[in-house]
Each structure stands twice: as structure tokens, then as C-alpha cells.
Image (cartoon, rainbow, N blue to C red; front, side, top):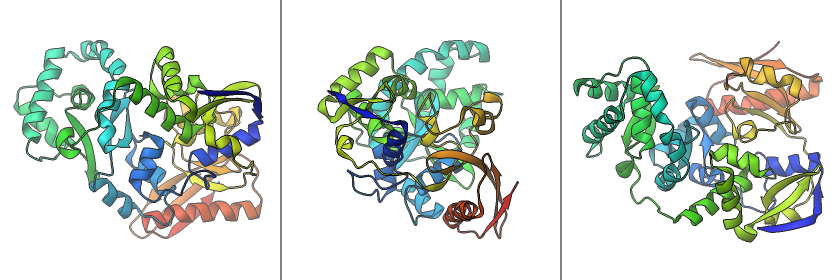
Length: 373
């Protein structure tokens, strides 16, 4: 990795670069992203345990796209969902799913014994469930979550309570299955090797380097600690990954704190951030970091993550800073979008917020009705 002791960024400069990295404004050193596959590969992984949020995380980065467009891209297997790291569902490039599971999912898998003990399951039960799912999905099968559970119960495996979820997670974590696109509102599963054949298999250092490059190009400038937290890698592996990326990454200082960013961004123009965005709750804009003070006033954290339970509210972002939350309510003929400001917004800003929410309504192909608290 290249290092420079002379490059120092202010928080405002870092925020402008970070928004470009997150592809929420034009990137100064990279072409625009035109497809779901390009967006997901740029990030490497995008948190998507909530499907509606995951779809809009893609849509907001693909101007003019609709929910139907994004769903069709997922049906074309431009990306898929699985549990690659931190025990959380992410969108990942389809052909990279297996090496990511092997690299970042292994620690989560190793820690699953305690959860199985709590649920009254053995490792043999989990392995048998994975085998059953492998059999019923073979030959191009695709089953809803409920149908998968039914298959497990027919095989004599107890899927009551949280057992079914754990067994479905375990099969995907082992790389047997993956999450295919929803059918209606129903989650579906398929065999990973059938849904996304031709999996890439880089060696360990190449995999670590790829993960580091993708994270820092899509989230940087930010810290090595954030990278370790996002991936679930050990501190040792996080350091090794950054080193393996070589001169593609550079160390700088942001307000006195060491940070990493893609080397081409060093020469990017320092532009002023004045964008107005309506982002989903589970967007990488806030999820990819432990320290969110660049984007979020600490006194607003409780409004974004009520109860500190890990459930992020959709956010209104002005000039890179979170200034409000919003919620949607769907009906057949319109989508109601209720805004809760966290800062004073003058009439001109409110108009811009309504325009940003209108883009979301266009994504859903529904007329918007915006209300303010």
C-alpha cells in the first residue's frame, strides 16, 4: 500500500469523497454505473436483509431505474443474496459468492455451535438439513422459504421456532444454497452452484486484496478498523488484505486520523457537497462504518436506530448530513411518504426533499403523497 504523510483531508473533504465512493454523486475517477451487476461489484457486498431497502439501495444508484428493472436484473443473476459476513444478508456479485463465504463467513460459521445448542439442534441436524435442501433443490429447483421448511419437516427435521431460520442460514453459509429473488413477497432459495455456476476461486491473498479494494473504493476514505468491522475479518487479516491490495490503496489522514482510500482519489477535485437524497434504512451510507460522525450528529442516532437494535430508519440526507427520517406506506394507487425532520429545513430545502422522495415514488411506479411532521 502506498503511504503519504503529506496528504491531509478535512472532514468536509473526506465526506465529499466518501459520497462519491458510495456512488451517491458522480465519481471523479470512475465511469457511471449502469447495471445492478456493476453497482454490486463496485461495493463488493451491500447489506440487504430487508429486501425493500436493498432494492432502493440499488435504485438510488441507477438513475431512471424502476423496481421492476432491478428485480429483472436479479432474475438475470447479476447479483444474489446470501450471508457472506457478520451473519447478515448481503447482495454480492453472483460469481463471487463462494469465495466470500469461505473468506468472511468462516468465523460466523465457527461460532454457530452455541446458537444451535440454544435451539436444541446438533451439527449433525444442521448438516442433514443442508443435505435435504441440496436434494430437493437439485436440477434447477427453486422453493420459497415455507416450501423449504416443509421439505425439512417431511424429512423429520424439527423446524419449529427459530430452528428453520438457522437451518436455512446454515445451508447458505456452507455454500449449498443461496437466496434467489422474491416471488411476490416470498423469499426463495436455490442451489448456489446451479443458480450461479462458474464460481471464481481466487487464492487467499487475491481474495483479501479484492475485498479490501472493493470496500475502500466504495466507502473510503475510512479506517482499517471500519474495514475489519464491515467484513468481520480479524485485525491481522484486515491488515494483510490492505497490504495485499498494494499501491491501489493509499493511507492519508482525515482530521488527524489515519484513513485509507483508493489511490486515484488523491488527485480528485475537492468539491462542495450540496446533494439532497432519500436513502433506505439499511444503506451502506451509514452501515459501512463504526464512526458515523461525518454523516450523522450523535444526538440524532436514537432517531436513526431506535432502541439501538440495529434496525436503521430510512434517512433524508442534505449536504452529506442526515437531517431527517422518512417512512413509506404503500397503497394500490399511491405511496405515502412521511418525513420527520431532525433539523430546520427551509421551504426550498423541503421542495428538494420532496423531489428526492419523488424519485423513490418513480422507482415504485406510484404517485407520491408527502407529509411532514
